[in-house]
Figure (cartoon, rainbow, N blue to C red):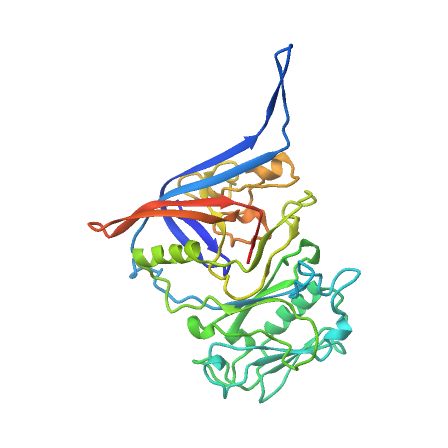
Length: 398
């Protein structure tokens, strides 16, 4: 069985070797006795409390195994939402009846992306992406890292995300070296991988791009994307700077305990994580009003989710080749207005290992850690204890 995962806001995970766990779900059903008749009236308003206690051990990683490796930095850009949260939430950036910006506003606007190689020296220019509403073609300058992204004909945020993925997939070169082991023949694909995924707001569709550095390690962490590098006064789309690049991910038992102490003892959410008001329109995309936003960069280690694997038979298909007859799924707490099938094991279609998304409650349990209790076993160099996780659909912090 795979290990239980605590998911941080920066998408890094803390894996726990669980020996057992206890899941408590309590439903508030007040009962009113009726005098004389000795009957009882119960009022059920679907008010539910839940907490999860995980008994686990923390031990050293086997650094000779595949876990001893570098992690790649990544950034995200969600063209579906504005970065501004003045009104209490992220407004629709391009879509809807009253968008923050129009396609005409984006014409000739530029933003920058630094690679792990260009980030190490100010003499190396970052890649500049220039939006062009006069053409649907993408052009690559020669001798300078300038990509002109054609957005003519695009009408939605999902269109822009799709155009960006297409441009990054082309084999054109700027005749500029972009990677430490490359040459002037480097392409955007030499430096980055890119994918388009569902935006934080289900109404915007596949409006979010995830850009991951090909060169792994901390050199990929930087303060780009930089909106807007032309210094024009225009609202920014919602984005996250390059983060997550590490020298290696092999940790001792003490390292893991220190990470938990930091995440629970002094971690500032600085914004909100999650959403409310799931009306049950479509479970896989409608997870309520996404209210996630950040007021600063101090919340990356805040724990926002939990993935607990379990063995499923009902989800096993004829094409599955597991030797024990099971397939792994995440335990879920599906709230809001949903059908019985959608919130039961029959609707639990995503395999364990699916990336946790706070905007999609079918990828894990939203919430945070509210307590840890560990003791040290010096003879075995392990820490034994428990982690208490409190599920919550929306967490607001300062």
